[in-house]
Amino acid sequence: MNNILTGLPQLDKFLITPIETMATSEMVALFFLFSGLLRSSLVHSQGLQFGFYDNNCPDAEDIVRSTVEKYYNSDATIAPGLLRLHFHDCFVQGCDGSVLISGASSEKTAPQNFGLRGFEVIDDAKSQLETKCPGVVSCADILALAARDAVDLTGGPSWSVPLGRRDGRISSASDAKALPSPTDPVSVQRQKFADQGLTDRAHTIGQTDCIFVSYRLYNFTATGNADPTISPSALPQLRALCPATATGPGRRVALDLGSPGAFDVSFFKNVRDGGAVMESDQRLWGDAATQATVQSFAGNVRGLFGLRFSYEFPKAMVRMSSIGVKTGNQGEIRRKCSKFN
Image 1 (cartoon, one colour):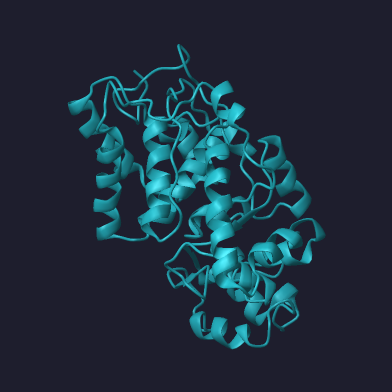
Image 2 (cartoon, one colour):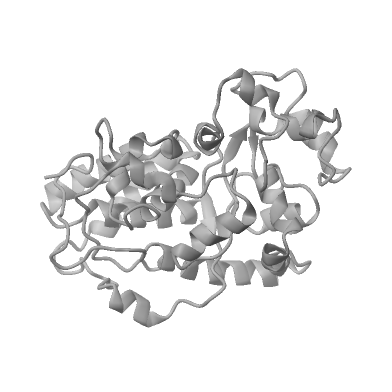
């Protein structure tokens, strides 16, 4: 991931700064692989519980699910948007809904958060829940549930979400620097995940704009040639999707060429075989620290590695959604997700 913006005349032309790259492109749906197993003590020590709303709002999970499904049926790209929204929330102030707050200097206004989507889904679910169970279900929990449902709807695994998060009372744009940047070297990316108790990152569903890909295809590092890490078989396909004439923003390409709308292991095969769309993703294969993880999910036995992926990913999401949670008397239960009480 070192210097991935080198040789991007399109970015200079549109005055897009490096830190805006991840946000303004629709390269949403970040997901994280954690090498270690989730210990059950982690969930309990954070004060989260399975079935937290069974007694005081038993329909909570069903309401969130039906809301996400409604928006997904109208626009399937909302699924990666919700997953990315949850990730951005958890990396700043913990999983406390701080990214949902509106305001001139709130977290969502930070350059790192430009292009976040799915706020309307969370607001809709919250409105229904306030009618059904006023003052009970937190916005942070709604976001955690919505991310789970979004993955499930795209064909990915489902999992039980431990609940009981409280909403935070702080939301500051300046705190968003904790988020990984696509321009960070692999070592810096890994350290930012390690700071949260996580390891390794990649994309599996979603899209990006061709202006963030074309430099790899036609003028990598200003040489006039393609990125040498792109395989000869993938290069014609990528050039067809992002022709040299596509010099402006608006033309999109799926991040997973094998199965663009599905949450599966095809992405890892693309990385292994030199077919990753983003340079930052392809560098996962070139870095010794991350290559083993890619290889472990890119095996030739699709069923076996698909099962392993479906087993590992839910554990990873439970762990991520437990970062810095507020429980008990901490924080608040917002009446409206976009503003403090």
